[in-house]
Image 1 (cartoon, rainbow, N blue to C red):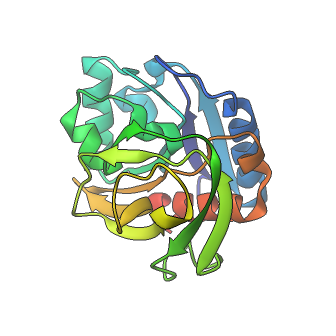
Image 2: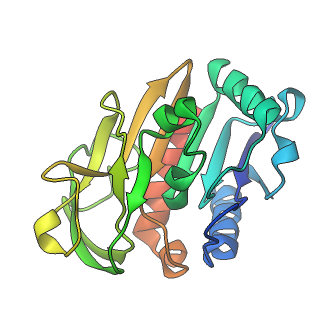
Length: 218
């Protein structure tokens, strides 16, 4: 049996997160510890039918803006429709704002964010591999996204308590992580993961690994 292989894609056309190298390094290490081969790239040319076939899941790590052309979008769509997995980390929701299918896959689009600050997260589903290890109320510091065009079909995993910080705009059920079956494939998204420090946080890394395993189909 071939080793499980994932693609980590971190092309940025707009804002560039300084944490991308730390994210790549952390995901490679997670892969080594869990028998997952990890390829990292910023090259959108990886998005063709033959190449994508090698991957059990594709991770968008803090991508931003318009990162794929029409042919690459078509190849990625076919990949998901053939049962592929998708993981979006933080900036992945600030990507391909004009491509409606992608917005539905991710589960929503980034709208804006207040200053980085501490807040309280509520884990609302602990039966998922990305949340089973998390405390019910998880206090951490990050860049907390507000969203637009949220896909109501997703399964919520984590919400943020808007009373615990300043600048929330998505009301009581303000989602921060979710998953869903979509168009033949599986998608997991977490809004966490802005800073370099996040990628050395054991709980955050376990959260990511659980999301990757879900997207892979394990």
